[in-house]
Amino acid sequence: MTYVEFPAAPGRHAWRQELHDRAVLAGWRVRMLGAEWEPDMLLVRRPRLLWIFAEPDRGRLSAPRFDRFVELRTCRQEAYVWHPSDIEKIGRILI
Image (cartoon, rainbow, N blue to C red; front, side, top):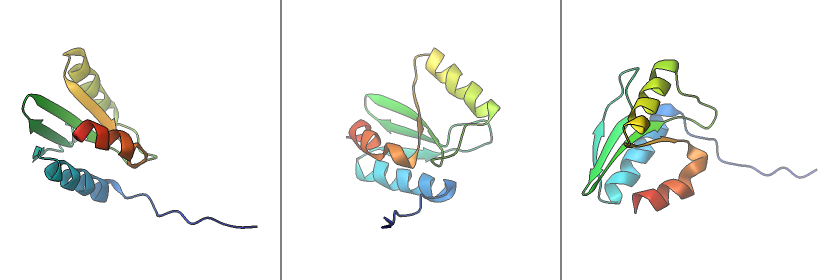
C-alpha cells in the first residue's frame, strides 16, 4: 500500500498569521482582533471591508462567534469563516 504524505494543517495561530501575511501581500490593511466573541481580523481595501473568522480545518465557531458572524451577515457585511482547505477561494477573494 502506498501512502501519500500531506503537510499538516496549520493550527489556529499559524493559520491567522498566514492569512495576515497573504492579505498584506495582496494590498489589504489588516487589523488583528480576536476577543472570544469577535472576528479574528478586519481587512480593509477600498471599497471593501472584510470580517474574517479564521478556523483550523476541523475547527468550528464558538456560539458567541457564530452569533457575531450571523449578525454581521444579517447587516449585509462581507463576513467569512476561512479554513486552510479554502485557500484557493481565499486567494480569489483577496485579489
